[in-house]
Image 1 (cartoon, rainbow, N blue to C red):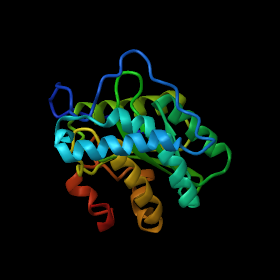
Image 2: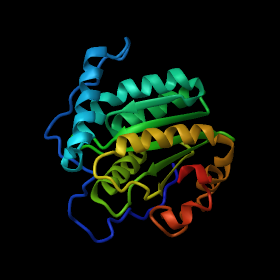
Image 3: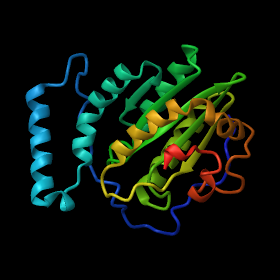
Image 4: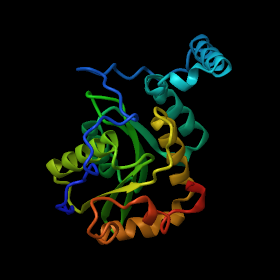
Length: 237
């Protein structure tokens, strides 16, 4: 497996990012999404959100736990609406690597993954998976700034997990978008990006080609936002 030997930096910052929330020692299991989302539960969530918008309390509330709870259902609905999306939600980088291995073994050439950072907190990014000429490109698209603790930790864990697995001809890169300014909507931003990754499939060939050829990030640990727009369609912004 080929990777850059450089470590992803946190921009010299050690403070916790507002895009990361501690979850303690364990994560709740993913809910069963075989059926439709409970209408009563969804109604309660919508009514609560509407109330918080009206009274202004939403400014001081973090919604990542709600996003995490809802994400399996949102992903199921997105796949139902866009069959070619081929999107999976995984709770940790270890599940991500297992899903990537399964996807490769099944002969799938394009897929997307929403990945959470794991047991130590909540931060979600989107991974675009592409097989080209027998080689695998795995690109993590980060909606927030890579200098923040959560995005940097998630990227490092993803990189380390892929390296440990030693998947042949697998190339990993991280792309910073820096479009998220809110403190807790990383899951919704990443879900929206996943849809754009599928819709702009043909326009993303170059970024995967350059990742496989190891020229995407150059000497940088990730592709910064001021260079990412050279590869990405305007619909990403």
